[in-house]
Length: 636
Image 1: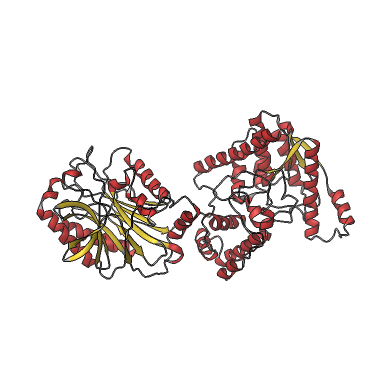
Image 2 (image 1 turned 60 degrees about the horizontal axis):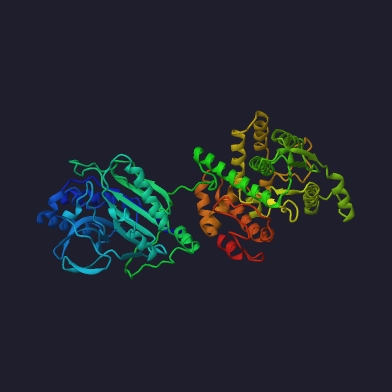
């Protein structure tokens, strides 16, 4: 599938204990259903051909032979279907009985993978019937043919680059040194687990954590197929908890006690990017060679049935969002606290505009000073009105400082900027970049000088989205002595301010924060409209920040190319923006991101708060003169 996606399925058929003929008919029907849904890897439960709960019937020749016969029926049934299927059955070899997964594709039996760890505690007594499988691979005779048998078998599927599959069975994932660890180190990007895990109170949640962590630790996709309806209820009940996880994220999960097909689209490119990024992954190599079995599945264009959050930096769940906001707010304030402890400065100097970013910076400073035990009056909130300042933002800046108990200082810079424009011979009626940036640089000069007067630090207000787009005046608002918002994208800034409004210490503060949230984003460097409203709206000029934050996340966190980002954005913003609009702003994003690196190369210090950061000293190092040509050509 295009862009590294492949659809997979975990399946729980309704089985009949000790009746392989009936079970294989159900397995074939569920295989067809999963294949019709587009699944290319289909996983069934442990011992599903016979049922897991056969007990001492596993010692009966009739059952074992019937299981083999049923497997042969299933192999023939898959003829003409490209999906790789894993089904569980008891298999006798060399006078021993093994709990195995048979790998089947397109009418061919590819291999048997035996269960390595055989539980014999509590309700489990598998050692009574089964022998532990070995890591090493050997050939065994099945139906007159030599078939690979062993744990170290990897299936390399050619329809997606780096798509390699290994298998383990139930208990294998519960042990300390799971086979999946070795599989991943050997190159497997997908681990399948054929399981029969009985249900007891609390086990489902633990199982979910186990599968999620198995996928995270191995940086893999993990497909877990669990036994369910039809197993004997003499002593146990099986929950049919099918799960598909990718690098710690649960993509799909069936409800408990539900038979059927659970599908998800996994992203191999995403997994490979994280393995490449994490230089520690793979430093401990797999201790032996694997038997690699090539599997041909034709590449195809398929619509991706996977949700992509249009706001990847902002948790959609309200409870998690509030927790995230508190955590980020704590990181920002403690970073600033440490800087004050180190510098022994007396004041924080912040230019407050009545906009979102400076509001957040002022809130962070208030929290930091509370932590330090310093009076908030030592925060100097400076409002610097000029040509573009509106009454709404000016009054909000004043009210915000008052509500937080900061010291308010107003410096009108119109005259100073006018003199400067006259000195350099610039017509003040020409509202170009010189006209705009002269205001931003004058503001920064005033803030720096006030900081010198008061033994203070100038606190930067610019956010990560502005840094990505270069939407800052070089040596103007681009510069400060500590940038508390440098790791926070614009879409998250809004939610942080909303969180502070919801938890505000007084009604006046809540009211002004809500009005700030309702104010259009603007640098206010051009004169207001005739009726005093903001005339210069940032998102009209550079594009919607929700799009740019989406682009930034998938470019930097996952290394995706522009064509894949365009595709994902089309899914995430379906019904909001059409492809032409997304394409327009994606091009703008790349042009600006590459052209503006020189501004990021000399950023002030500031705390990292998430998995994406632009600090030239930490997460992102890029030459300022890198060409954007390859990215634009891919889009075109």
